Length: 339
Ligand code: KG4
Ligand code: ZN
Image (cartoon, rainbow, N blue to C red; front, side, top):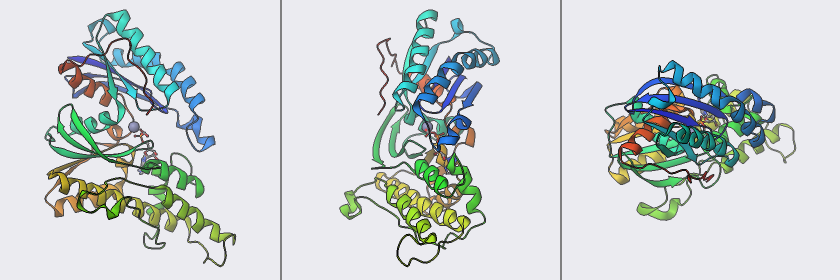
């Protein structure tokens, strides 16, 4: 079964062809990072325009590199939620038109669920039940995965996503966009215990049945206040530490929270395996800490390779394959659902 995947939820235009849900025949990602870099974040209008210009040539390349053509596909999968509404509409309109023109089935895919599926595409030995953490620029969520197409959200951020916090703190430190890789690089030369940034656990007092949610906006503000101290704007605060120390201390605070809540989720659900996806799953310190904490509790931790962590269309085609196999075909009324 050969499925074309289309991804335009945010600032990456992507097209991929996947055979039998796992074998990636082609996968192309056109990053818009350079277009958004001067603004320190994604500008929706610019993202939409770039998707319109880039998508169809990318689909043609993906089909050609996979040695196939539209009429030979078994389905077309498109990420239709969540994301920027205009950006979603570009991918969705293209997918509908292609599916209709070629008379092939269309299937709408949830982008975050696809990040979970990406971990399974990289690790054939990962099978439900397991707990999944998806941490990216737009989302930070925990899932209880019970079957191939059955998963329940058990926690999510109440404000900023983890990747968004990396991006904003990177901008505060003047390290550039996207912030995750820049902070990780700077942190390598820094002291993670230099600044005691807060660790936020929303709903912590809820006890055993309490929340598995995340919050990162307080941490971001704490970094801002720390840096302002440098310029003497806030009382008699001590001078801030060098950027490398701030980056390392911030990264450690994010990693502490992601690790603690993910381990708690695995213990609470009784899961013996943990999957981690989304752009933040590229982070070396997160990989190291979660692998160690998981091993200490006899839980296997699975990370996909970096190209399957960040946004891509192979994961959309892969999950689309599972949904099509389960008979979950979408009609041409399929809507873009931004949140
Ligand atoms: O999954 P993704 O490509 O797009 C979304 O769905 O949002 O994730 C992008 C996010 C950005 O916020 C970026 O700063 C973050 O992932 N990221 C990282 C690293 N690489 C990318 N965060 C921490 N450490 C990294 N090495
Ligand atoms: Zn994503």
